[in-house]
Length: 78
Image 1 (cartoon, rainbow, N blue to C red):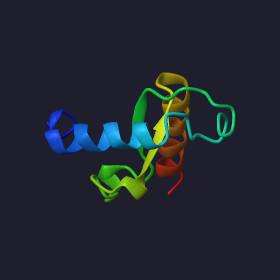
Image 2: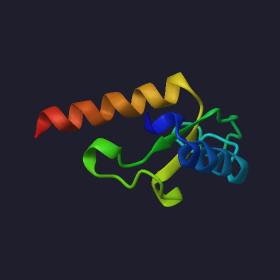
Image 3: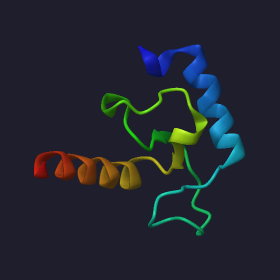
Image 4: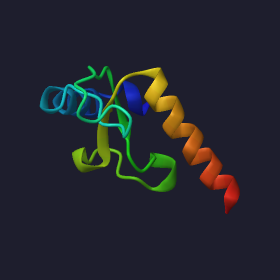
């Protein structure tokens, strides 16, 4: 799968090296360590899969789950 591919793993590691702190709105500026990388515009919405400018560092479940819930709510509003 994509998330097991060498290009993704390399880019993910580079993003976390460049910005090791969570970039979500709630954590920005608080120096909360990130342990995952999220696509700002999801791949399924035609977001660039391997563009570092479409990535944000995130702390795992709390921040990512809130973002995904917002995306799903926006999808159902349309």
